[in-house]
Length: 59
Image 1: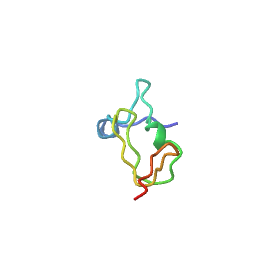
Image 2: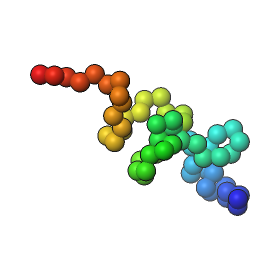
Image 3: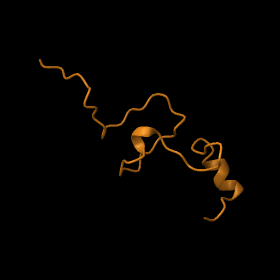
Image 4: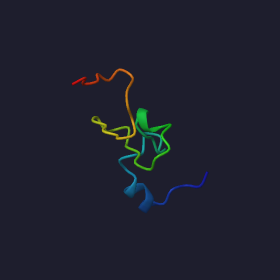
């Protein structure tokens, strides 16, 4: 695997883990969309993700 340049490291610093690898949030790992979020994000809002535990409003 080729090494990242310093410019790429600075640009992707929010996504890099302690080993220097790009890491995404747990919900984004298997997602096919390009809206991936960092593993450092605490609040994840994704229009493509619907949890099975989500409460539906029956009005």
